[in-house]
Image (tube, rainbow, N blue to C red; front, side, top):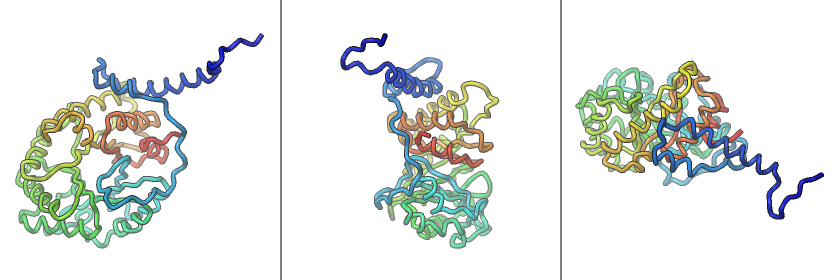
Length: 339
């Protein structure tokens, strides 16, 4: 005999399916929970909702207005010296990624001349030379200075005017509105101050979004990087975003990999709030998070969905990856798309 259902009551099948959907979202949230739930996390969980309709297949991103100068969503990092054949506009059309950070601009042998990878003249980079095509496809590109190998311009060029001119020349050549500095010389305070003064001058000339990329440790930022950021702001340079380079633990590390990462980001958030003299909510918005991958499989699909959820719930500036190249499926998940 068929069961009687009260008018206005949804069928039992729909109730079960809705419950499963909510359980999926809550399951992702639980993976990020600290051992003791704080009010901050409780509010995030209360705001969680089941995912909506699945995203459509990647398509060319719509052109955006000239006022958009800061990265958002997912930022693809391209080491142009390692991958000189990278199809910049093609990648934007194929994946839907709208923002790219092109590296690495370093000091050449003379110290004050910017070179891609420390050796290639700015105008001879086949990847960066396609930035105009990328813009036509609706995308944006920024320049990444510095990195783990070689010398960033401020560390190699002691002449303040020459340094400012070098930055201005390469930024102007590609017409970018976003620059990223991956700092590994944070203890060189003379270089820190030269870089800061140059950035202050450049920002007086044009609207320029500035990101500093630093290593994330389990306890947050290193004392050296905290002091570097403090000295940078004291010298007059405004920092829009601090990009946390987070090495992803291998799957063999066991349970709690994403939870430990979340704890490290929270520690960095507290440090940034103090250094930049901002409140906790604004500190979240100033954080970008880059997963540094040892191999393409370092992030599982579930890991990527957790990171996307975490970024959305805490209103992070953007997500990115570095190191090994993740699969298109992982990139889609980091962008918040559902399979």
